[in-house]
Image 1 (cartoon, rainbow, N blue to C red):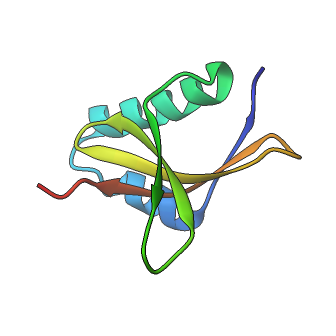
Image 2 (image 1 turned 30 degrees about the vertical axis):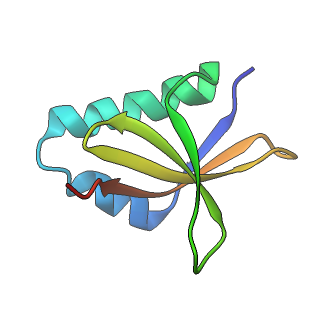
Length: 85
């Protein structure tokens, strides 16, 4: 049950700014694994000032913020962010 993955420009820039390439490669691999298998640590987060978002905790302390379109079976990766301590 694979899904398509699209990376937003900002997410690509975020990934390129990860501290080391091994962690960036792991994040990318986790996104692809999630797209293929549906497995991974995903949480729905509702913010007070915006819509609900999905987060894939790919390589702590980094997580991937994404949206999922069920109709097209597409994962849109919006950001790669670092968790706050």
